[in-house]
Length: 360
Image (tube, rainbow, N blue to C red; front, side, top):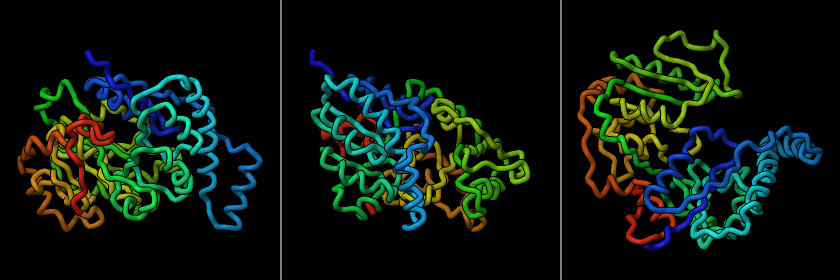
């Protein structure tokens, strides 16, 4: 019997990981035959910006360069000291593959040490590349055998990084066949987006909800930087504001019980969120403002309605028609292309993978 290939998964740093995306990623890699280890970099010492050098540099950048982003670099450096200590604890181990999610948020020193543990190292950027991490990513590039982004614009914008394109993926669910009861007519869970009127997603969703008469569930997550007072919140009983993170499991239970899920694009990238692939897997229709979805082979107007949420009134007739359209199954070959199984094979160029492409 062949020994399973080993993979070390390194997930984006300083995030709240409880029931996060790293769990289904690791669990599914195990299911498809990998020996998986996950670098536990959770619960690092909190960043408090007490380092004198960082304080002075932050003042210098803000005052003389009109650049307010140095604080993010200082935060990154702080957490990566903890990360380097953690990678040092397994320095004598060796893996077939090293998978680093959000490599731009790690320092070159960390990336170098991580890459030395594997026969092949791949990084995946599933968010837009932010300019204040770009210099670090340039320095880290030499340690990657493969470096991917889900944003075609970033690939074109930074040719010197030699980025390859890949999308997100769906993970397998043993209870997938038990999702026939679609009780929710509409589901959305997501952040506020910002406190300015043109940023607030609750304003957009309130207008959209006027097109739905059935059972809907809309939850707006308020984070510490985007809190609303009671006076600022909408007095709409169909919109709920929450402060705690919703687990991945709970979000998937809601998704597979829905007829339609809402996806609102982040302004700083055009990559497709996980919602597209979760809805694909559970055969749930989607309303989105990410027009680039039309450049993918799985796009079907029966399953995905592209709108401009700022002008949602113009789509009233299209939405009403879309509500009653039946979901159209995708061809098997296209459906399987976006599975975690094909995704990981493509990332490391293992065996008979299907190439994942942006057709725009």
